[in-house]
Length: 226
Length: 226
DNA sequence: GTCTATAGATTGATAGAC
DNA sequence: GTCTATCAATCTATAGAC
Image (tube, rainbow over the protein chains, first blue to last red):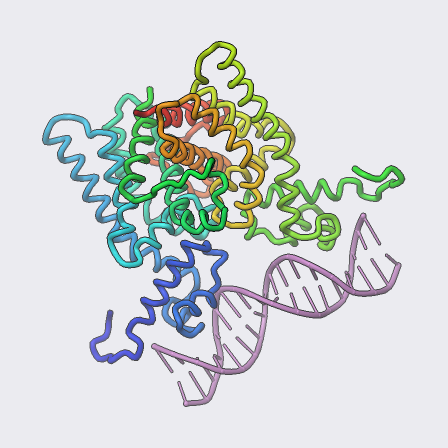
């Protein structure tokens, strides 16, 4: 990406590490993924990680950075479009369109770029991941956009006390994170019988569009509850 | 608990290990908690874990077993009370009372017994924990009660297609798990500035009663959405 | 039942040849 | 930039004295 002189030997080593790390972090979790697993899957040398990124934690940060910057850009544009439309038409923003502006890019991101689906799982995991390392890096990235979401929702639901709004947003994030994570592991899970909590052998179609719609319907109703 | 002859030297070693493991698993996560940390906190010897429980995984199972059996008993009784009342009065069960029968014991358990609060955090974590070990043991315990919850909700919401109901229950569990986990880490988080996503310095009162009420209001509205 | 000591495996990270 | 070899730390689990 940088020097002009280089006819670099393996121009995609960094990318391959990022892709493998993204997939494994999303699938196995940060703490359960060893550098050896990553370099093995990326088919690069073990030492390459520390050469290119410096440490495992810095690699995680790079994984987030690569996807979250453009994703947050989309979310920001959509949230600001919602606010501008509401100002232009002299009405408060709708709760559902506001939530959609935040959530749809997250779930749709899965189809947007090769490998982005794995990252979408990682986001779903990061929202709920109890681990401090993952949580800290992730929160740092979403904090500004979360603030914008919160402010827009305050306009959409002016009668809701801010404290209640805060918790309802948390409920929504929990639902979203858990949903993405279940989608991520769902395919394996059904084969492995890990999905035994799915009663009566119901097989759920979980295409992005219908999932997003169901989730938005659910949390919009919850958000607008009296 | 077993032999009658023993004047056991440290009758509470097992309990102390269980308590320490419960607290650390809930607070740090299963994979991030070493046996050394547990035995250090419990002030017992490292080898005592394997002597009393056999392995780290068996210890986790024992931690779940100790609390989940009585907790599920309460949930079962409350869910069956809801069903009986509905049959007796010739009406379908209410969505909110059904959800409350499942969720209230989980969040109220915190105040019920000494140390149970820690376990409540562990449950919140287990619902959403991506780790397979935790998830598998936990799912095995809640599967029957989950089935009962699902069946009762089907009666409460007969017009909702089962597939949609399934996902809405998942949304609710995600919201609940995330909520418990945030409550668990919230106190530390506010001090450490980890709660930076909390906009404008809003301090949320998170006593069990108001949290449960807010959560139930949210997910009941979501569950009853058209 | 409790303890010390240690085996045996895995981890993140690094030094140095090429 | 890539590789081998290895360090130092950590982990779960166990053997055996007391």
